[in-house]
Image 1 (cartoon, rainbow, N blue to C red):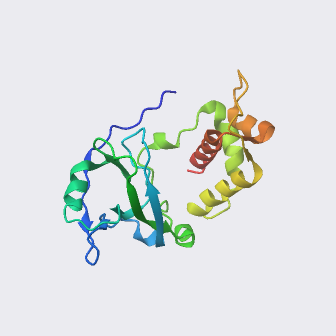
Image 2 (cartoon, rainbow, N blue to C red):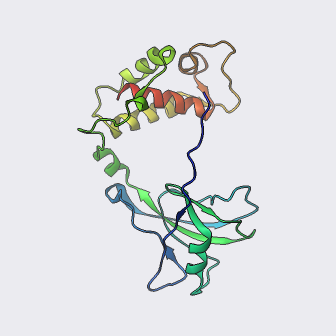
Image 3 (cartoon, helix red, strand yellow):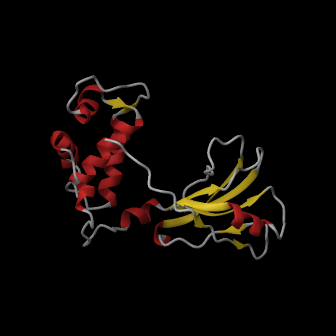
Length: 211
């Protein structure tokens, strides 16, 4: 298959200056408030980026640049920052090498995540999102079967991911043998490990089998 990234949004990045410290710039509050608990802090110094996308953590709350209070920072940031995709910021042009950023992001509360169930009572709008290729269906369903008795939604996802992390070895250099018709079966029962994309493929297709 050929996979293509969606076209970039190029959406404006709206920011609010902090009330007590105007060097901090804050993003609009997210919708998934019920799964957040606390914040995470990072300090970043940017080197020579090979991309216009900023290497920021997920669930970004806000940031400040170079520890300085400057009334022009908000205007500058709104001029140069845009949303490439949902949650992914990019800068028009490039950030100067050595730029220092302090970053605040939402932390996900695992217990709240496991309690929430966005899957309950809602059908999948695009059933093609649940397709599993016919030659991989048996292996994906066999992996999924052990998690079927669990409550639908995040508990199944969490248990499946923990199963793969615990019982299989991450091996960046592993490959699928030429001519292998069922790479999921090979990953799960013969190699018992592989590069990250094999973990992701097995998990995604098993979860599709669970609906």
